[in-house]
Image 1: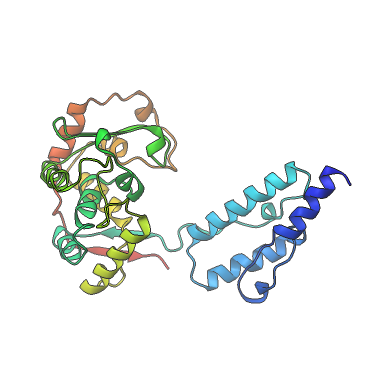
Image 2: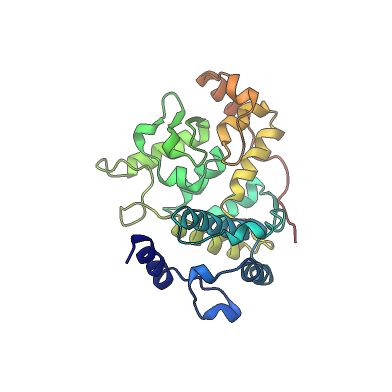
Length: 282
């Protein structure tokens, strides 16, 4: 038996796509058609999955079929004959006032409170904050330095530390065991997981009574809105925030920012510039 045939039979046995509704019975990946994928994506829409979530699933399936096609396991990529969903479905336009943010944080577990405060004051992603080590953070210069491997956009960046956050991080450092290099740990002294953080946030948000409910990721939206309303130079705000889907502009390619520029920008920022607004596109 040829190697190609062995691979083919292996995928027949092990690669099976399961979906909701009538797709409860799995079947070989080679039998998947564009029509079946369209039905699957339509069912996901009926199940209230957002356009961006469905698009991520579509991209993952397309990548899988491209790999199998190159290996000679399948003859075509059926995902190419499906239309990507509109990412605007479920798009969020969110601003959380400082007072409401404090109400949420006060209802969070003590170990998670400084993490949420850092997210709010820096615009960093959850993964960036939870993965942060003390050697990346300089409280004297007030600069966080992330390498390309630390960020979603796979580009190095520097993040200025607000004066309020310096005091918060000082308290975290004094309370933490010196043997661990991570900045934030859970009550057991181990590395915190994003899911645990999300559960803390959702519980607190429910207790406050928001509807629609703000998400942890919305804190990045809040930071950028605060930066714009504080008149921070837009390209400096972009450089601090970082974005995985944005191509490098001429400004980001040729604009050189010093630590002083970043500190000056964060010192300009105010965090109580408006009332809470949460709008979700249906």
